[in-house]
Image (cartoon, rainbow, N blue to C red):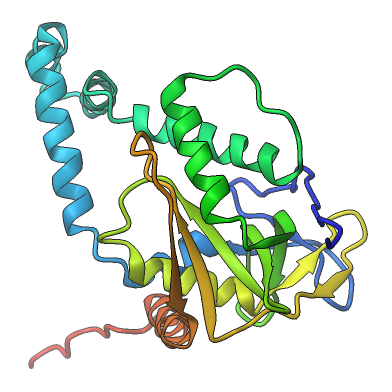
Length: 263
């Protein structure tokens, strides 16, 4: 059994929420883009936006007070934004995210060999499924933070696991993965090419993980099942490079010039 590695500490961040990273050669910390933000450059948000619109509609239908607020503040963007956020909450759109966060924390207790607290039977069934599905994986690192200095990206991966003598980046998902596999492939491909980072010293540590394949641990909340999938990190890395090109293109200047005056 390998010793589980974790560098769980609060990462200092700039005003945009970017982690502040000491450059490899030392010096003033620099804001690195979060990995989830970096790989979002190619994300198709059509289905997500449609889902959000449905949640607002359902929330307004259930909360006449919010509907009245919208009517009263139709020219006030701040109040309208607030009403929409409350409508999404009223539709219980955040409940799945809360449950997912809790399952992440509980699986971490399991993987550290800890004792679970008293939890609802439904969650217990989910966690039993998780234990059975991951029994063949040796947990090497949990919630480890790392950086990719060339792309100036940083983030925290769920797990590094060992299977048949090889180490792999693994990601735990508790919601639907139907529409997000492209982004997940990018995310894990970028993580697999990161180095572990110690925020106290700025020291980097090689991960020595497989860079062609990663593992998705799919634990859909409330379904008492857990499925493991291999995910193609070569394809993911190809998309990461496209994301880098898109991000660089968006920074381009000088796309216009004054129209010449006619005499």
